[in-house]
Image (cartoon, rainbow, N blue to C red; front, side, top):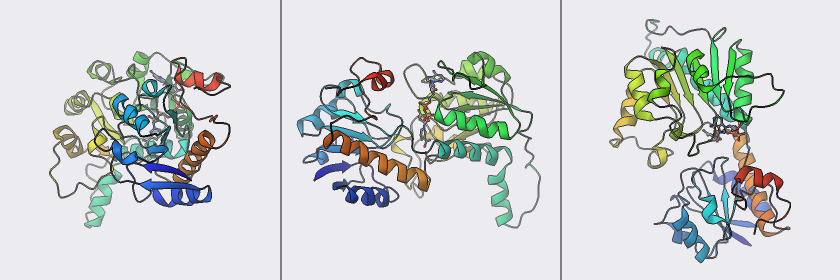
Length: 345
Ligand code: NAI
C-alpha cells in the first residue's frame, strides 16, 4: 500500500480523497500542519507527500524528504510556485493538477466583481438589520465597459467568455496569445490605460511578481476595479493600498494576498490580526477579500482528488510516466512536460 503524508488537511479535503484513495489502495496520513522545515519529519515512512499552495517545499525540505525515502511530491493545486522544481529534479518527482475546474475560479472572480461593484456585501448587511436605504449603494453597468484580462489560459479564457456575455469590451495581455481566439491583445500599458476592470489570470513567476505595482497603477484609469484570483504576489499590496487611499483604485476584489501563507484557510476570529496591511485593506469599504476560496466547489474538489490519486498511481504503479509531471530536465518546466516521451529520471 502506498503511504501518502497529506499536509495542510482541511475538513473539506478528506471526503473526496478518502473515497478515491481507498478505491485505489492508497493510505493517506492526514496532517493539519503545513509542510515546512519544522514539520517535514512527519513524512517519515511515506513514499509520497501531498501538498497545497501554502506548504513550503524548498530545497532544504526536498533534501529531507529525499533522505526519508519520499519519492513523489503530489501538488493538489495547479500553481507550483511554492515548490523548488529544479531542486527536486533527479531526486523526487513532482506532479500537479493542471486543471480541476477553471470554471470555479473564473466564476468566483465574477462573483467578487459583481458583489463589489453592485455593493451586495453592503446591502446584505443592511437588510439583515431592516435598513432598506439605498444611499451609497450605486454601482455601474458592466455592459459597454472595458475589461483588461492579464493571462489568457484556461481560467482567463472562461472569464473572458463570461465578460462578453455582459456585453463588455475585452482587452488582453499574454506573452503567448491564444491563436484564432478572436481575443484583442494589446501591450500591457495600453491595457492599463484603457480598462475599467483589470483581472489577473497569469501565474506567479519571478517575471510577474508585483506586475501591478505603483508604476502600473499610475497608468490606470481613475476608478479602475482590480480583481486578483491568481496569486497574491502579482500585486504590490502596499501600492494597491496607496492607490485605494488616493481614490485612484475604485475597488479591489482579492481572493489571494501575498502574505496569505500564515493567515488564510484558518479561523482567526477572536485573535488580533498582526498583519497591518491586510487589516487596513479589509477595513476599506470598496475591498472584498476571500481567503483563497475561488477553487472551492464540489466539482473541483472531486476532480482534484481523482487527478491526484491517478497522478500518484501513474508514478508508482504503472510505467512511471505521468502526464502531469513538472519536469526540470531541460529547465523549461511546461514545454518539457509536453515534449518528453520517457521518464525524466
Ligand atoms: P494556465 O496555465 O492555463 O494560463 C496561464 C496563462 O498566463 C497562460 O496563457 C500564460 O501564457 C499566461 N502568462 C504567463 N506569463 C504571463 C505574463 N507575464 N503576463 C500575462 N500572462 C502570462 O493557468 P490557469 O489554469 O488559467 O490558472 C491561472 C492562475 O490561476 C494559476 O497560475 C494560479 O496561480 C491561479 N489559480 C488560483 C486558484 C484559486 O483558488 N484562487 C485556483 C487555480 C489557479
